[in-house]
Image 1 (cartoon, rainbow, N blue to C red):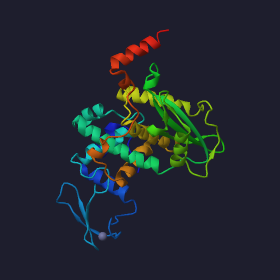
Image 2 (image 1 turned 90 degrees about the vertical axis):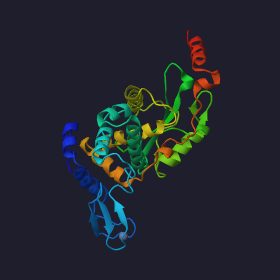
Image 3 (image 1 turned 135 degrees about the vertical axis):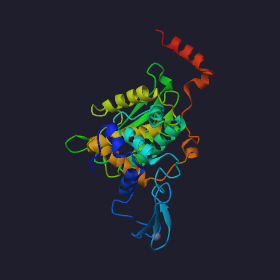
Image 4 (image 1 turned 90 degrees about the horizontal axis):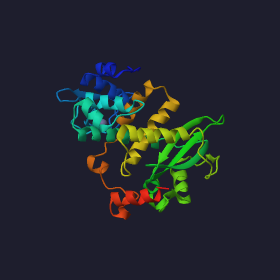
Amino acid sequence: MTEPVTFEAFREKFGSVQACVEALFQARWPDGYRCPICRHSRYYLTRTRRLPLFECKACRHQTSIIAGTVIEGSSTSLTKWFQAMFLLAQPGGISSLRLSEILEVTYKTAWLLSHKIRVAMQSAEQSELLADAVRMESFGYGTSNFLNAHQPLMLGGSFNDAGDLQGIKMQQPDPDHVRMPERTINKEGYQAFRSNQVRSESVDSFPFYAKAHPKLSPYRRQLKLWLNDTFGGIGAKHLQAYLNEFCFRANAMLGKSGAAIFQSLLSWCATTSVCTYSILTSPRRTLPVAWRVFGSKSKWLKWHRRAWSY
Ligand SMILES: [Zn+2]
């Protein structure tokens, strides 16, 4: 399947629920329908509902086209879901505010769609570990003037024998793995990244303390620009979801043509279970906000202006 390149052409092609149902069916069951309970391949189709219902001919289990996908339980139309996936598959992604304007939905709905799609991107990222020759670095995301507001991040890259970059990963470290107040990642943080994100037989081909690798440093810059330009900056709580999105597209672009990214995203959305609003917004342990120890943001700024005024 080759998908159209412009948003207009995309909207035309996937302008009906029926077109989206067919594409979602293909993405979910590329080898034909399989009953989620008994794996039987034949079904009765019920079309009287908003979305088609598949009933297994063997065990009579009924499943809708969106059950078991990130779309499950959503009252937003499939055509809007497809448009959101298309826009998040584009090189710069899209902010929830802009998405809400384009889809003509509330900000909360656009935010929820984006984050559910980011969960599918996370599944894609978790499915593949860094391999071959692996490089691990750390860097900070945050304002350059106020060093202790930084969110330290781990960045990993895998390289083939020719020295070409094959894939990247970015992770927020566990707060226990961050030295305070300088906010640098300790040895345990590197080890945790190594054991969770890197294939065990890979070789660490570069020492920890080396400078930024010339093939990785553009990703540091792009990430900061993207977070600040597209979203006006992202706080610690949801930062990992945006890192997943950034790496999903970066890795897709390293391996595939731009046009295949939507198709890949659709497949992940069709095979990743839904994440509810309460799970998406549940508390998450992060580093303390830098100015908390100063009592207020203005006291913190005043302290920094004094410290940095010469
Ligand atoms: Zn069945």
